[in-house]
Image 1: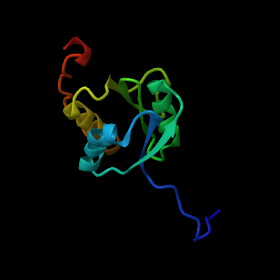
Image 2: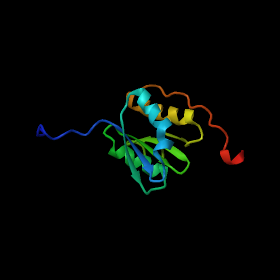
Image 3: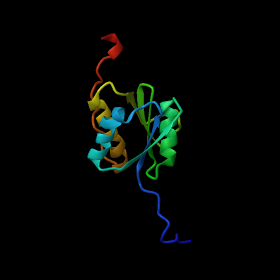
Image 4: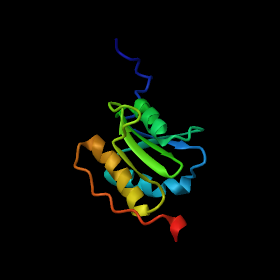
Length: 129
């Protein structure tokens, strides 16, 4: 059955789920990586602390089947085809703008079916300094 003309189809985007304590400022490098690859992203906030659960929920909400979860000290990228506890990519969050940017770009590269970019080695733990 055809959809009525005035009903919009869901936008093909990557979904980004973030814990409500994650600020817009913290997400800038990750979002820049997505933007550089030209894949749109939509965000939602949740009380959930588990970045694996956030990423899985985001992937299920994404028309493209790719979700990003950000919480605590982690960013997780997964697809709707993977089990909730087995993400595609996981890395420390906000340790390096370069790493965050690369992870955003790699989430977009999954959608575009391009080889993933090398994730630079994250800087040592700030608490050790």
